[in-house]
Amino acid sequence: MAVKEQRAELSNVSADAGYDADFFQWTQTTAEMIRQGRLAEVDLEHVAEEIEDMGKRDRREARSRFSVLIMHLLKWQLQPERRERSTWRATIKEQRKQLRLVLADSPSLGRIPREELPALFRSAVEDAVEETGLSADHFPSSCPYSAEQILASNFFPEGR
Image (tube, rainbow, N blue to C red; front, side, top):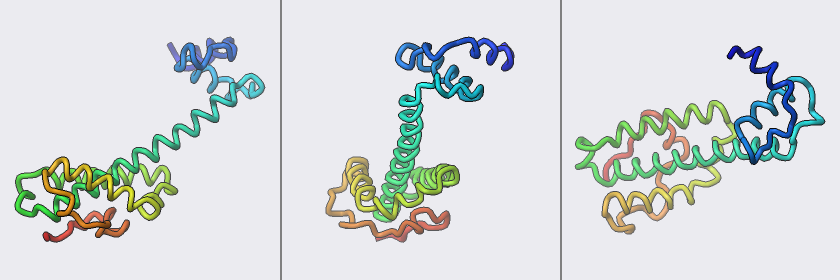
């Protein structure tokens, strides 16, 4: 079905294509009503909720990627003898690449490592302890890397 035909079909649909009954249909109908300027018919509460959730999703993704990146930087630093047999370098590069994409779309998320570094670091250490089998006392008590280092494509911490 062509886009024009889909829009024509949707233009006859009311806002009753419920949010809870058929979310996909609701998104399509709502988008078309907005395009047509039928704002009085739009379920604004759910639109606002969905927009807010999109921001939360991007924030969760950035936090998760930062945590994984920090964990791999720690493993890189604390287990230099395992570097050659690991995929750590590839994981570090991939997390940085994906973070650059997220931050390009939402630059305000760049404040996450500055504002949340202690929590991100604790999460990274918990995961590193589980993955490496090392005790928590093998890891620094606070993050030894700056936000800039974490994101820098050429930064790989030296061994112990």
